[in-house]
Image 1 (tube, rainbow, N blue to C red):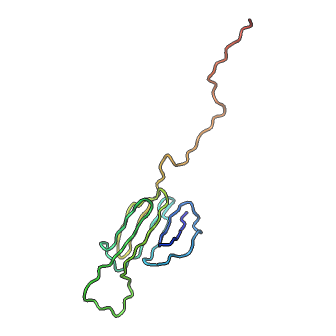
Image 2 (cartoon, one colour; image 1 turned 120 degrees about the horizontal axis):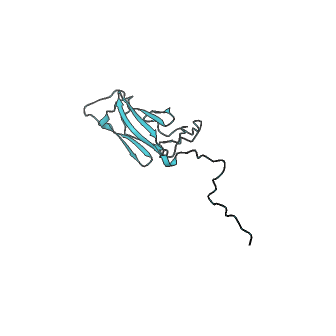
Image 3 (cartoon, rainbow, N blue to C red; image 1 turned 120 degrees about the vertical axis):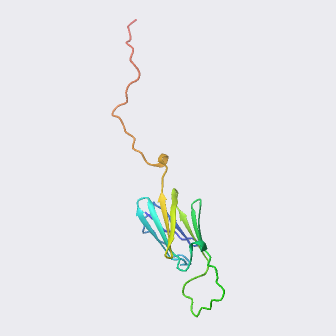
Length: 148
């Protein structure tokens, strides 16, 4: 299941073993808005609303178990806003990924950044069933003892 953890900085931890009811206090900042959804047992999707940003104004980096999304809007000279409701301030959002969760792809369309994540547990770490036999075969042959 997915659980969300918030620390001193805006971050989200995708922890597959936590129940989804383990939500804690909201982050200090709400920019940019995002959704996290479970696509199936081992796939997740983060959708981030980035209205007014273009793909060249945002960066997405994955380092160890931290996914960092940063955006910086290029200011255009000669614009005189009477009201500015669309946020253009720089932001940095970090998502802490659980072990074995990796970014598979990211796409940007119509102001929405979609990040596809997948959990790939190595074969050596997956549980496996071990068959138990009824009795162990005897490998020692008995030698007939002769009376002396």
